[in-house]
Length: 333
Image (cartoon, rainbow, N blue to C red):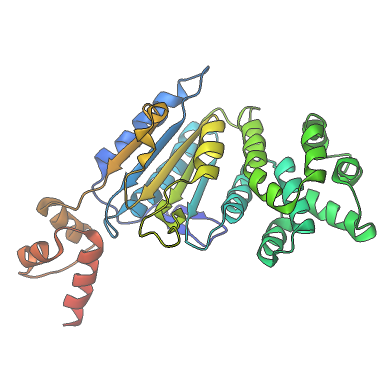
């Protein structure tokens, strides 16, 4: 029976995916995850980055781990909060966080402070893309919908004084949480659009921290970030890559406990050059198949390649993507 995992970004994974090898790489993740499950006091920031050339199978490892995490959920009879985001060069921090919010709501997570800040940014910003992103989470946010209704009546509303009027009496957990965040709400009212945009990741981190430390799950959450290199923008006029992803690295990753980050990238994450990351980041290189595993790959996927096994291995060097391309060409010929 197929196990299907459906996410809002269109990804559908099945348990029956024809996946071979990579046991060592996957075992490393589960060993670290099980170790973290035993920690009850001081949480260790943990980032596992699978890196290697394009087409080597990094994304497949992340997807396989995601399926295994789903299976672990059934074994433990308790849901492990899971997020999978395939990144692109068009993604902004807000787009990425919105994707995470929508996925985590399936585990009954709430993000009131983040949503209030997003609403206010959409209200004061003239950026059409930002307004579009606010619209994208409006349907899944009762809080934003209520604030929109109030702002339609009075366009000069102040968030600090209106938020509790907009909240339904049944939303007692949200009300209690925001009661302790009144200082943040007052600051949101006074911020300029650029200031709001810069501080929104901090509000996201506060909300996620609250969810993870208030009994939503006894197991650490897992966030899979596929194709991290997409976040690295070229610096104007300099032929280098800017790898400083400060909103992600310094705000989200370092400030949220009970969360394991699993990334794929074409390069090592160089944060480990800073001593404070020594015990937090693990760069796992993903290598091509050797000849034995290439043959197993063809066998499992029922690929008949006749007498050309050795030639294909020499041609593709065991890179899975190249193997698939050459096999398709071989079939056509």
